[in-house]
Image (cartoon, rainbow, N blue to C red; front, side):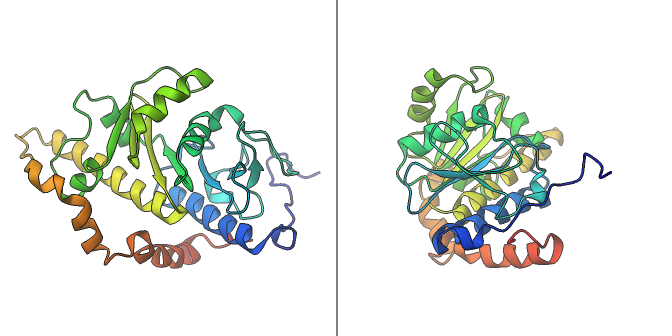
Length: 259
């Protein structure tokens, strides 16, 4: 008798979906694997959602119960705006976990991907009254587009959505107070790179504070010009400059996501 903890066989969906959907599934599965590879996962909790390119009100999200390093393109599940499951799968989805994501997707036409984490340093900074401090080069890019949303308990209620999207506005970085981090991107790659920056900023801040010395703030005028500087640094390619290399790293360390 097979052990109950063994993964069930999941058939490939590649022949069942459009080329555009399959490409998105591969990208999103890669993002889940990379989140695990970078140590940002929280067991099976948190989500990365991506809007389907040919169906405005349908999204891909993780099967609830799979570890992030186990997720594949075929195991991702389509859901509607309410988090209801649209694909046959041996796994459930967590509609409650889609509350925050659905709010952002509904409010932002440009929200192709929403990435949410509960990392230790991210939550630690979210609990600090001052939030993200302008103390590193990385912080200027986050601070140029950062919002905050106050904690209202576990995000299960629809009446929180208007307040969340109002706080986010048109920014792509959101700090959920006492909860975690969230990034918004036009693509999976954009959302991932933005989370990399945000997580790095939180790591640097916690380490700098742990040193106990006086911190040197960055000049506000430098922060004001950060978006233009970021374009120069990435040669106008944004996340596309780093995403192919991240996929090569994933191919070496966690192959199989593209199945």
